[in-house]
Length: 213
Image (cartoon, rainbow, N blue to C red):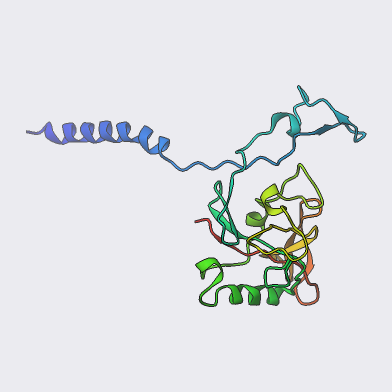
């Protein structure tokens, strides 16, 4: 009988050892999406053959992008599980020309979340910096955005018929650490993120997001 504790300990160790690989195998993994680059350049800016260069346009590392137009004025990113507001050119709250001060950006969100709420969801928000950068496509410019966010944008089109992105700065909900009067923004002309934007005096574009976690 005095050997039972030792046996029980051994059994416990064996069970935990057997479960460990399963726990690791089942752990949630996350990889960055591809930047979108498929062209390669040398130091002089000349387009060159990509094969063997080892640059981004050659290796194309990351998850392929995957989007779904939900048919209700929104786009779902299947990789991040984020759902994005489409922007239009019809003078509505979704118009791509609309610009907002920092506080006004959150007023727009409040309007989207007023019942019956945009696309039937009442949990829209201003995206943080990293969320907004997930739709940047560095394989293009002016605008540097994935194709589903820049499709059929013509005067008078709605979120049900087009998808627009202005080639300019879009607010995020992320403030600059150490300088709270400044907010981070993403410039979709080239796809860069910066923290030089004054909340109280500078007006920029806003694209709402929901979901993702």
